[in-house]
Length: 142
Figure 1: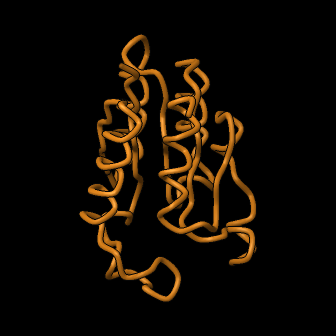
Figure 2: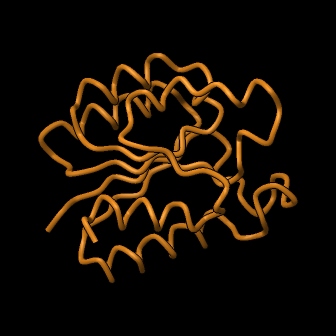
Figure 3: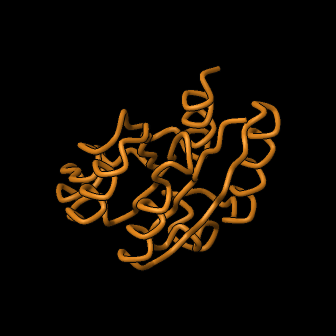
């Protein structure tokens, strides 16, 4: 059975509270439940984690080396400047899909530049929470 790590960066735990006009009203728990149901349907194991700390995210990515088949990651604001997360993604040589709930290219100018995406197989943005499920499908090979 494939193992996929789902990583969420800063403020993703505040879904449903933070800017509902941008991110919707579903909570982080709702997102995790959606991911677990989709993983069961796809017959893949998922480990879902969230941290507001860049170093913790790097540690979790590095722990994937030889232990996971794919990474779904929403780096949050770290997307736009974290070379540390980029380097971690490149070092583990595991397919990764970056997910953003909002369309970052329709938002503030600083959000248009993505540093971490260069370490990923692809990026999904602007499709709401559905983006996570599409990333899971891709990594599961379905």
